[in-house]
Length: 189
Image (cartoon, rainbow, N blue to C red; front, top):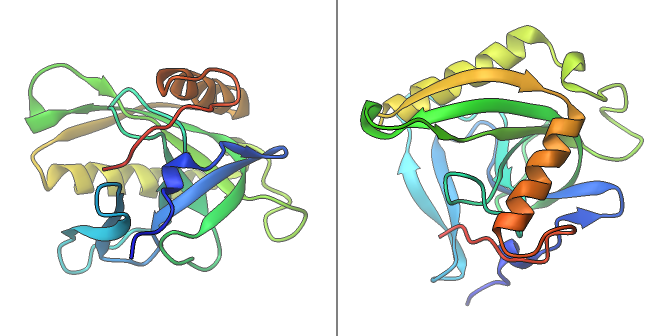
């Protein structure tokens, strides 16, 4: 039985950004939504000892420079299940570039950095400056190791704040076909 396409959800719920979590923190399995099958499926198994150090998903109705929906990291105290929608507050963006196979042109592959929205839990986190620099380095190291498994190279080119994250969403919504509120439909297949 197929489930509703999470890529068709709205980008925003009030002032918060909708993030669909595909892979929960602590998982050694990379999961992704398969639009053709209408279910979450196993994309890859990470090497022993390597796990996602954060919940990882995407913003619906967006298409990033790499052709996939805009990636989002959700910083939570406990992991959520695949397919869970988290209403998030933007903290900023990790600006990254990726080179497939370690050769060819660098392609932008940014990740939004978010926390669960609302008044509880992470109320003190309002920008990327509120995130421990060690944690930001750990996130960058994870992506470098993760992409190296496929022979790809990734580099962090910078960190930017909330306005840059909002701009990334607007750009990715426009690329999906509908600027503004992002009424287009990026896919994650």
